Length: 274
Ligand code: SF4
Ligand code: SF4
Image (tube, rainbow, N blue to C red):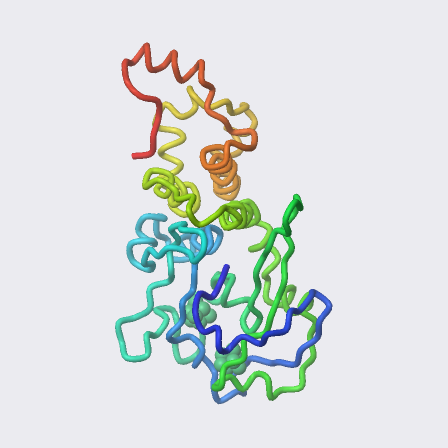
């Protein structure tokens, strides 16, 4: 998850999990909820899963009501950005005088704040490296308080870990795409698949279970059962599917023989998202 703007507010010091900072955010600060305005919050797949459940909406309804599509910098990947209100301050739709209406299910970026984070994959390395930095905004009084945290303690306190764990497969896709030269562009179809497999979980479920998907992709029975019952399993399966579709990697691959047989039998192309 990345804040796409406001680079001027970012402290140019790279932090690790053990780095310390002093901060407290609560109603004692006169700035309480002031930060919930004018933000660019890129929503992650797990943000959407949590928020749509919280609001009793389908993923399509949530995306239509509360997000606008943008292209993620340096990746050309389509991502949903939380739609701010159309008022002067571009207020978050979930902020109220007494706090965040969806606090227990607030997006990962809101949990991390005032810490920003990023990932990079050093050349020739298999794994990505995560790094952190502080975002200091002039109106934020939290830095005047003397409560000390390590980055790891802050992450635990704010419930960030489960979000990062759930989004890991998706973050890997983003980092992999970012490592490609700029001139390698995704097709419109590939972008649509990325959006479907990352964010539109209810539509992705229909694609998997109501199209020819399971007759042309090799998916074992245990996985089929798991993704039928469990939304987080379905979401992570979507990341695996995208890894195969976009990068020809991973265990969820189109079986060419089955696809060919189906095309012959049905005289039409194999399953595509619709
Ligand atoms: S501006 Fe800073 S201290 Fe104030 S509510 Fe937002 S995060 Fe907390
Ligand atoms: S989701 Fe909640 S915490 Fe995040 S900006 Fe909106 S009101 Fe603030």
